[in-house]
Length: 395
Image (cartoon, rainbow, N blue to C red; front, side, top):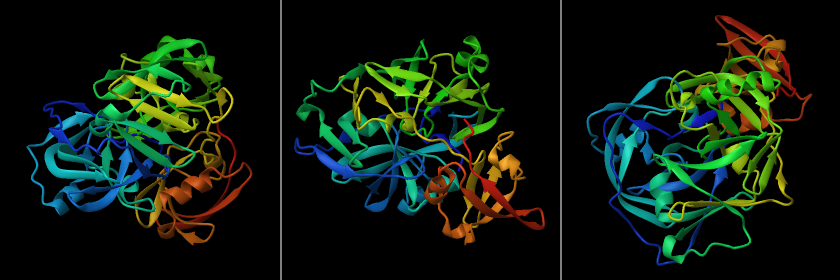
């Protein structure tokens, strides 16, 4: 599947709103289980009593899909357009819900944006995902994401005591998205921290250009590397040596070197976006928006391991239940060697119909060890073909 650059980081063009009230949790922390599906943190949520899945997105606002808004019978304000990742704009509207409940953490009278999200994000995984939760929730509760236990602890601000032994870094904010200072291979910069981005590090095109990064790194060919609310994002891929955040270091993270001319990754206000693939290299990450800090607890040792990257050399987007659509083929990568083309529809993988393969299962297959063979049944125009794809590292 295509790397989702962010589900809810949006730049408003017309209206703004703020939450009116949040219910306390009687001063006690509440622990909620989560699942990582294709590099997104998914939690169970009830919106006005209707159960669905939600992405935890540190850079996002309250967002729901139009289909969920219709099921809830919610009226929305006049539409406007917003920018996000990618060069395009997307039409949105505004509504309010009576109650949002995340495992006993309750917020009442909450504003929501109604935003269309891609099929593979909402229905392509093992569970429906129709909601994006971010700033409104994290503003009210100190939030600790435990990647070892797959648990999130929400603590009311007044009941939280920082742990002195866990190092932390200072947060600032770009609108509602937290930002930190970090050093990438001796280059200092301000980076947004966005758990809704499935990339490790996506660098803005001005930062790439000003530091001549395509010459500094061994890069892949150019192409579509990710997807956001504004459509596709473009650039090249590379591996850095080390990302330093405070006293912590992440070795060999994957970089998206953006060539975008509009949208979030064309901004001069920051160097780039740090996403989930960096955050999940730590045992725990704690966001304390009130005190403007982020605490990072290592899994052991000082340096964290970089995540493996998709070894197919392409994006396979589940735009409907019956097939994965091929796009963003990297020159010289496994998909190109196997003879796949942009627009091919993968209808079966290793004899299993695509309708039975969700985005999480595809993610697992695409990250299998180098040398793994995938037999793909594809349709191209009116032809039915079989291609064997041998995985190898592309970056």
